[in-house]
Length: 198
Image (cartoon, rainbow, N blue to C red):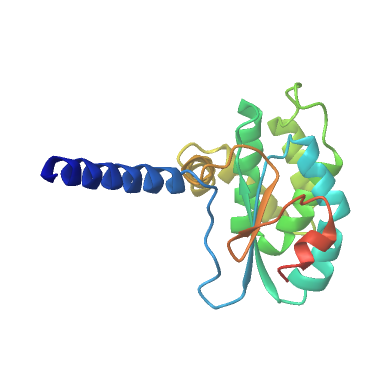
């Protein structure tokens, strides 16, 4: 009888351990901002055609009704995993966000608008420099952004690496993946699915 109890106890412990490991592999993101605002976290990649659909169909309303009115905090986590030039695009986006944060969403929108075949290497320094030049900022800020994203070990490079690591650690397997206050948005191509949590 004692052996049966011990075996049963060991089996329950094993189940608990397996359950805990499984839970750790669920997609995760922080539930809210430090200041209590609604937090939108979008995992994406500038080369992803499905992310472009979200940018075109959903983001204009989200920006106008929620971001511009300061009702939410929006974070774009650039997974940067479709190709090597995805990472270059991620660094450029990070540099814009660091030096000209008010222009970041414009930059993101413009990159998606100019998106090319995901199998083609098109997120080049030449392409990105031209998009940076279109931003409504001072010339010296444009120069700083270009230098930042091209400089190894700059903050833009480090953040790109951190975002890639964050994507992996939070078990994000595909993009776009969107969370609002920690809840995953099913079918993020439909605005009404975002609004359920807003």
